[in-house]
Amino acid sequence: MLVTEMLKLAPSAEQAASLLATMRACNAAADRAAEVAFAHRSANKMAVQKLVYADLRASFGLSAQMAIRSIAKACEAYKRDKKIKPTFRELGAIAYDQRILTWKGRDAVSILTLSGRTIVPVVYQGRWLATSGATMRGQADLIYRDGAFYLAAVIDVPEPPQGPEPDEWLGVDLGIVNLATDSTGEAHSGKGVRAVRRRNARLQAKGTKSAKRLLKKRRRAESRFTRNVNHVISKKLVGKAEDTRSGIALEDLEGIRDRVTVRKAQRADLHSWGFHQLRAFVTYKAALAGVPVRLVDPRDTSRTCHRCGHCDKRNRPTRDDFSCLGCGFAGPADHNAAINIARRGADGRAVSHAADDAA
Image 1 (cartoon, helix red, strand yellow):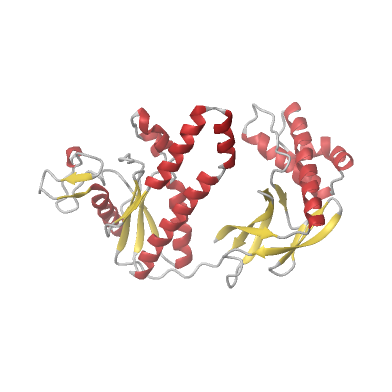
Image 2 (cartoon, one colour):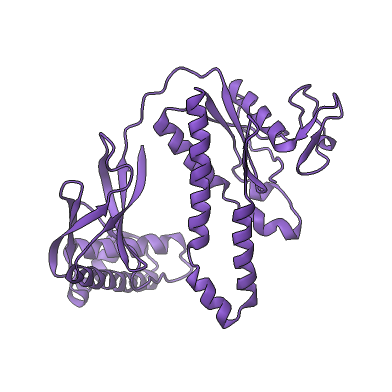
C-alpha cells in the first residue's frame, strides 16, 4: 500500500537559505512556464518545454531536471483549469524526483539546490518509514511550513495477508452530528469539529482587520484538528474490528452532497463534512491491519427497524431517535442504522448510490 508521510528535515542555516532560494527560483520558473502555456493555450509538457526550457535555465539558474519539473508543475496546473493563468506562491511546494533527490539510508537525504547537492538530516522519519519492508517510491515534495522544511514522501508499505471472510461485521454509520456510530453502540461526536468550523465562519463573516489577523493566525488549524479527530476515530474502529476479528462495513456516500437537500442553516455543515477523509483513513488503516472493508448501499438504513425489518420514514421522528411503527422498538437512530449496515456487510449487499439521511 502506498502512503504519504511527512518527514521533517533539519538543515543547517546555510542549507536552509539554499533550499529557500531554490524554492523561490523553481516557483518563479513555474510562473514563467505558466505564462507561456497560457499564451499558447497548451498544456502539453513537451511543447511548452521547447518554448521555455532554455530561458528557465538561463534566467533562474536551474539544473536541467529542475527546469523540467517546473514546466511539468505549470502544465499540470494549467490543465486543471484552462480558463485562467496559474500562479504559484513564492515558497510553494516543489517536486523532487529520483534524479535530483536520493536517500542516504533512512536518516538523511541528498537534495539538489541552486548551489549544488547537499545532504540534509531527516529528524522525524514518521511511522511508516521504519516499518520492515517499507520502501520509498516515486517523487517527494519539498514543503516549507511555519519555518520548517518537510518532505512529503510516498512510501510503499507491505500489507499483511488477508485472512478468511469474517463471520462478524462492524457496521459504521457516518454522520455530521455523530461523525461515526458503530453497531456496538459506540458513538463519536462531531460537536468539537462543528464548533471550530462555526467559530472560524463567524470570524470570516466579520471581515474586520482584527478578524482577518486572527484567521491568519489560525490558518490550517481547523484542517489539522479535523484530520486528527478522523485519525483517532478510524484508529478506534479498526482496533475494535481487529480485536473482535470482524470486518468493517461502511456506507458508500459518494455524491451524497448532490443527492440530499438540507435547510440553509445546515448547508455549511453538509459541504464541510469530512466523511471521505474518515473513510480513507479507515480503509488504509484496515488494510495495514488485515481487516477487510466493505462498502454497502446506505439506502433506508436509518428508516428500517433492525429487529422487525419494517421500513418507514416515520420510524425516525427526530434526528436522534428511532421508533418503529411496526414492532414498537425504540432507540438511538444512528445505532439502529449501524446495525443495518453491519448486516448488509455480512450478506454482501451490492453498493448503489441511493440517498440516505446525511445527519
